[in-house]
Image (tube, rainbow, N blue to C red; front, side, top):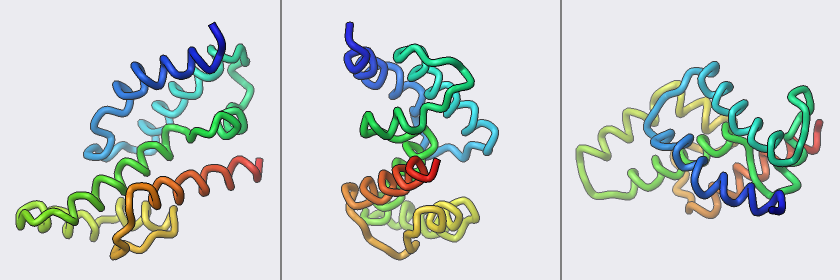
Length: 138
């Protein structure tokens, strides 16, 4: 089986389990790092790389992002979606979350204003560009 077919299967069946509810969970840096290592190890296994070899460029060449950026994209998209709803309770929760350090750091990392009302595609594009810029600096 080709490497890209294996990658497709992993992304179809394993990645959803790994990333389940990452929008609603506040992972510590250590937890996020361990989940990212887990995802990187799948690339190493599929493409026959050693543990000490970086997979950032490979992930970029496959037109994908690492787990950290997947979680960031999903969280930003989730908050944007909730902010558009007409439920007062959810709007209050989102407004409170937008004041949190976690959300402020997330917006700062991806150069997004907390008040921006961006589409899912635009947020995806911002996250991907940030990851690819990081890959090109390696």
